[in-house]
Image 1 (cartoon, rainbow, N blue to C red):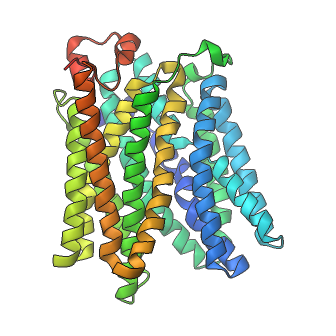
Image 2 (image 1 turned 135 degrees about the vertical axis):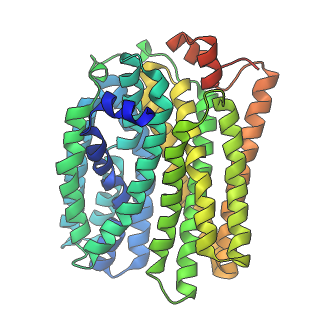
Length: 419
């Protein structure tokens, strides 16, 4: 029933277009890697350019969020899509005849101009449901968005792999086509009218709560480290069994399992507050990575990955929901993009550290990084909850109550109750 109500609120066309609109983000790193390796015949340079692009995405995301909050989501979304298309065109042109410096710069520009579909669409849901008086549907919307993200990261590599078999240029050309056909129209059609406001001077906007947002950023970065470590582990495993192509299929399990539990999160009971969800799901993520580490040795890596994947989406959804609650309405986009910036930075760290350990310890070395990151996420959640209990407040302080004048029941559900 919740998903039916969500369908009526947004309209049927929103869902397929929104899913396709985020594909360029899911395909960018692999498309860049394939394109530049084919052009330079150097995996080292292609990997460096792809890693720089991921860092540029993390740095450019909050900038897009700041501009969206100031100038409106529709305007900034359209400009970002056009700029990203131009950056991809520059990268394609550089790969056909320019030097490595031009390719490197163009790769970074692709990252900086990346349309922040995932973060901005979550802000869209918040404003849309608030304006319709259906804020009770927000947990369902965030559950759907987490599942959509996971599905895009499953479909993206498959999409790139199929096209790369035709030509190393094909994934890049297809990504540009998707930007024009879906990302740009999505920004034009579905940006919430309330976001198309007059530019507001920075000093007129409320300040972002620095401490809670930092906690959320670090929590998402820990999740990124887990992703990076698991990517490395499945790649090493596929090489050890002499089936390199199996890496993508095994990692797809991670996304599919996460997507399934993400959808199921819409039916969590209202009495299960955000505070309890954050702490509980940090614990289950830690348990999931520990099972992955042990199961890879005692059972098999594919089976362990499938089981561990079920713990990913609930943790991430709790982070999105908390960030949505802590951000003032006028700064919602920048808060969500700051949160999401932690993901690619964590992935880069996870890949680098796990790759180094995998050289000497194989799959177990890479998975140990995932366990350590998840344990760090749990310690962060525990320390945050304990610190806030001592201060007699919760992480979102009183911002959510002042924004929405929540009833006592709603405050308990959304995690804003006093301890």
